[in-house]
Length: 181
Length: 332
Image (cartoon, helix red, strand yellow):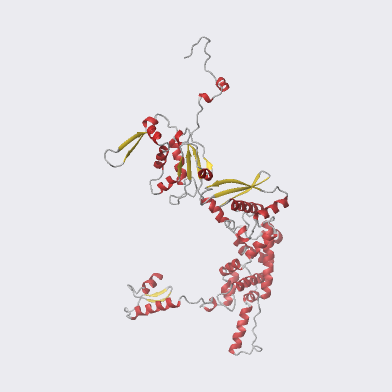
């Protein structure tokens, strides 16, 4: 029974416990999501951080299918791999990679941002990626906190109401017989 | 020195020397003695077989002048004792009994050469009452909302044999006590310490004795948590009692945070709300443990025994000499 433990032990339990963070990656740049994940997987968000301490937390990322690269990265960013055997050099664009496996982009991004040592694999095991917002029950039970999204999602024109559209200031009023394309 | 001893014991003798004692080594010897290695090996084997030598009381070691040591004790603690009272305080009943038996065994006639030593029994009782009274007053003054059981628990912890023997050993009272056995048993040492406090009170007055107790016993409370000293089995019940006595609404527990609920190492934070306002929150491995910890945190806040409270005042007693009663209240 932990009820009779002295106070120092109870507060130590709270200090060294592993949290479970949830991030929604809908309409977010995968690089920003990956940097948030890597910070929390290493434990760098805690004042008791030490590289040998293994005090990283779990991070659950949902909606990885709906990430949003900026610019033309879907066509221009290339993921290359070579197994070492001749003729096995593969190059996939980000769009092809995403179609093949919707969690691969974030996984590779986080893998590249973690420290390049033996603790990296353990930290990757603590990263849980889900393409949609359907999460298994035991992971849902474990979650502690949802992190705010790094990018503010801009509203589409269809999401504005007619009143807001009318209230938007116009630069000039066109005459009545002006024909707009 | 220790390294050289180790070298000798391993029978590697690059430098031949005469080892006299710790701190004394003569390197000017004539030649390498052939018997030295055998001798040292035999001595090491003997030492390993017999184990460490039994502890000897300081009074039986060299360079010990009892009167000087007693005076030095007074000077060290910066208190002026009456030396007779102090010497009486160090004499225990068991010592008197063992002395009488020894004299009887040696054939001394007890009527003609009676032992002229008094016991420290009365001083001990007197000192104990004074200490307990002073500590209870101090406790009540520093923590006005702490109930009687809490005060009794804190005072009991401070006057218990662990703390008192720890302080007594570090003040070198064990060297000065006269008792039948060595090492001095804990109860005897505790009794001697109480007797010393009693002697101090009778020599210099209750104010100086109170300051002595404050400086040596109350300081043992620094860094200690209330519920380490006071074993409370049902903190929630006690909290409900306290709050209903003050007329505040009863606490409702709510789960604030949880982490890893389906893992082997879960963490739950439970907060206690009275009338929709947060009283305290506490962590725990299960929800029940967290609730109990939250109740303990709330009790610590109520009694003013938190870790971030204002520290107690241990300054030198220049202004406080005139008002001994206000001193307990102001030493928060």
